[in-house]
Length: 271
Image (cartoon, rainbow, N blue to C red; front, top):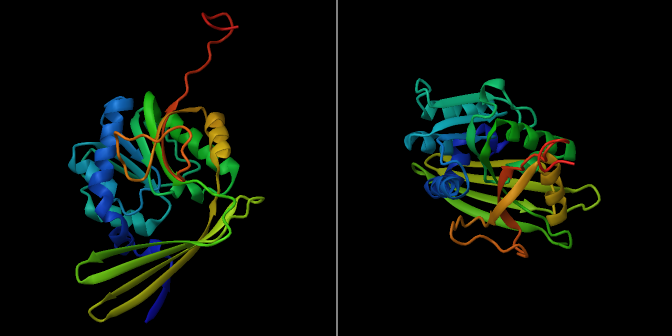
């Protein structure tokens, strides 16, 4: 068995794990845009990775903007999309700072669905990302933000497992999240990709630290960033089944919109 590190350097196998969800996720995003947003056609994906949703949006006639810090992921995204099309714009950039002037106020819907937000490991980094994204949205635009909240009472490791295929290769993904450190708001994560096929037996192992949130922590952060929450859904993407406000589910997809600004002094409704 060949041992490797960093699954982000192997985008086609990363894609194998999430690829089956692509059509359903885009259906869900378009439905949210119709129900809560502008119904416009300009979408933004922070940390777009290997570009599966960028490509799907392009196939549906959307104008797609994406960025990622992994050059390997961006190269894979560009290889699957005709960048000659005016509808696709990809950038090498970080989540904390992407807010180019040419896109400010132009985006109908931004989305991040697979817990990438938790890579932002400080309050300041998360706040900068949210404010940068808000600056790119139209006044009635949406940010659809999906990630798992944290049960700070948990004392055991959590495990998840997915299986995918790329050609004749079988891809098995196992993740482990250790119990959270509440004081530091951190949780250790490990991912193992086992790839087997003709003449191939690889194990790609990646470790990182995720930031942790409970309800009150994320509500306070979103308010500081200037967002209001319109609805919350689960990772099953059931558009007709929003979660109740008192849900105990940890998998959350927040449908966010820039909060209206308070009237200035001397204006109607102001102090």
